[in-house]
Amino acid sequence: MYYILVILSVFVAACAQMLLKQGARQNYLGFWRQYLNPWVIGGYGIMACSLVLNIFCMSCGVQVKEVSVIESLSYLFVPCLAFVLFKEKLGWRKIGAIGLIMFGIIIFFI
Image (cartoon, rainbow, N blue to C red; front, top):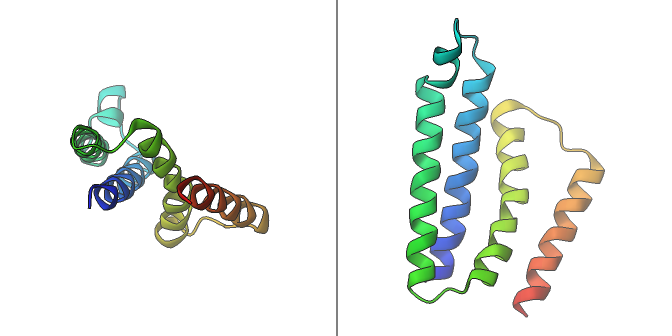
């Protein structure tokens, strides 16, 4: 159960990165408005929730080395979300690299 929460935490962090990307795409006048806009504040707030969820899972028995490996799923979640939300390209090299990372995660847990 806690491993599923760690995976959810990684997905939440990937969603937070999408909010940060959206905030970076906006044009704001002034330094403070660029970094203190709803997208950026929301992204960092959601990232903090992901951190708290990770800490909770580690306090319930999930080992740090396992969390570190599961966090590699962000290399899957972030490009897929960027493809869907921002129409960023997924080339064959990137898809192959993601597959290699997923293979490594599977080998780690076997």
